[in-house]
Each structure stands twice: as C-alpha cells, then as structure tokens.
Length: 88
Image (cartoon, rainbow, N blue to C red; front, side, top):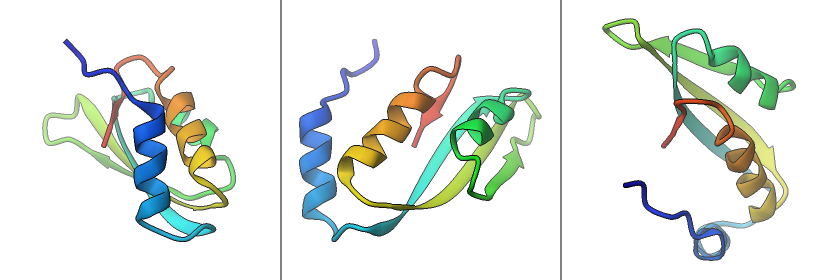
C-alpha cells in the first residue's frame, strides 16, 4: 500500500530547507517509452535520461529554478498522473 502524500508537511519541509527562488532537482523513474511525458511537464528545461540496466525503466533528472514550494508540489502533482511513475 502506498503511503499517503501529505502536501502540507512536504511544503513545510521545503520552506524550512531553503530560500525561494531556488534551483530544485526533480528525479523520476518511468517505464521505458514514457519519458516524453516527463519532458512535456518541463518543456523549458533539459531532461537528463538514463535507461535502467534491464532497459525497462528510464531515470529522469531535471533541474528547475522554482519560485515557491507550491511550484515544486505542482510539478510533482503533474508527474503523478504518469502511469507507473516513481518520484524520488
């Protein structure tokens, strides 16, 4: 069973650990062939792709200048709509 995401707690942690605006690193793992969905969320940013050793998954890394904790959460919420995504 997946742990419920607590948006308020996450927002408090983001705000306690840095000053906005800040450069934030997003990492997602998606099934091979779905990396374009991650790239669509970050059209103005470089998305680094690394296939898994078995080739079934793609690791994505994106660095984004964000203005607020709410913006970070918004990106995670968009990524959550991708089937099979794992947010790190």
